[in-house]
Image (tube, rainbow, N blue to C red):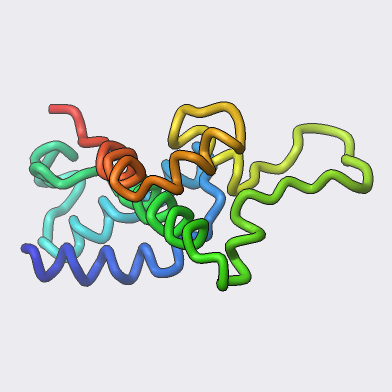
Length: 146
């Protein structure tokens, strides 16, 4: 089962560190992963009636794996000034005009939601301390309820 889990996760989560996660996208990814696991384990969703909790066991939610990967990449990029991504990771556009309607979700919005911090300066200070940032990254796991 761990081989199936590793294969399906690597296919599904390829490049997910750079995705801007909305609630809808997170729900779609979780559903896709559940279907992939059911197919790999030959479990019929309608005939076998296996709950998500028993399907996943003690595995974390796929959405929390994406959050963990995103936080890990952001901290890595922020601590390395020679990377081009260093200047872009906490960048918020301050020029131009905004369109009507709800603003687009940005990576910075996701980082604020993931860490629970409100300002870019707080996130930057947290990223500088590698040990503290690692506790934030490892604490971002969410499991399926029983």
